[in-house]
Image 1 (cartoon, rainbow, N blue to C red):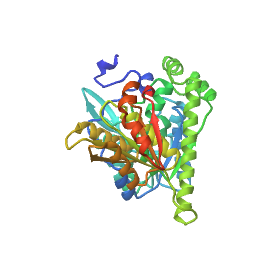
Image 2 (image 1 turned 180 degrees about the horizontal axis):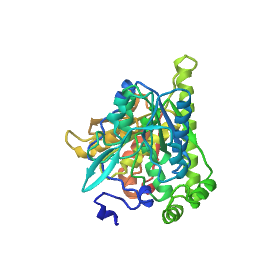
Image 3 (image 1 turned 90 degrees about the horizontal axis):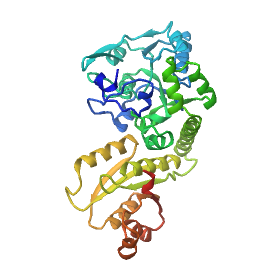
Image 4 (image 1 turned 30 degrees about the horizontal axis):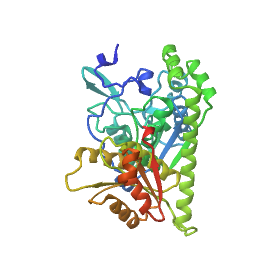
Length: 395
């Protein structure tokens, strides 16, 4: 059956569509914020991180569930996606599961995790697969990661799974590397909410062999398509390197936080400021690039828009930018000024900014030589600041 006949909003270039899984647009907006989640979290969160589907995250999660159960811990399965994999299905034996809730949407019935039933059951540990999943309209929350936070707030420890391509800050990078844009993403700050992240690693060659043998996608046609389009050796190598780097950075963050809190070192974190000007101006690309710079430097992300006056900028665009920045764990500010360079530098010095990220000027070379540009004036006026100019050809 064609995707449009299913009545769901599907993007044919998505990773999910390659293997026949529908992804819909959330009917409601996400509501959990970084500050509230950190403040109200009342139980540990453990993540199994993988470079790609099929490396064994769900298997690792269920195996840990059995180990906890054998030690006398009350463990319940909130949700697991087996995709018909025999070894995964076998591991569900002996684990109590919460019955799924059935939701009707556009004439079809879908199964979703019943988070209210899970919280009412109140186990010590809940196993919840596919953190980035988008819930069917009618569910309590828009995204499964919000269900996970609800569970943590209720005092239930959660063990979950996620792939590196689901992190919001890496969305454009992975699309450029693989040629396929990930539809489902999670805020980067959710990764920081985890008490422990364990990388489930597998070499590209071993994973491709698993797929070819039907151990990841039992349907031979889907396996062949996945191997050709997404699971190439080059793509898997790049994704694996990103996953390894992400875990290594988190370890560095933990050490730095611990040393700083004990007074062993002075807090010298980088503060990265990205300047966005208007819709269609590579804002998302700039923000994600600045976020990655901040993460690598274990620093803070700040995003600034300077408008010429009250109401001079599209309100909907500002809201979209603010939502993206919030998902990346940064702070967004809007200030009014007729002199953008002075406004940016003043803001930078007030907030102890160490690096500024801006987009390449859209002016012709001739206009830059005769009239100058925001970028050139910023570079000439800045003192003790690193300026990163991002080429527009990257988008």
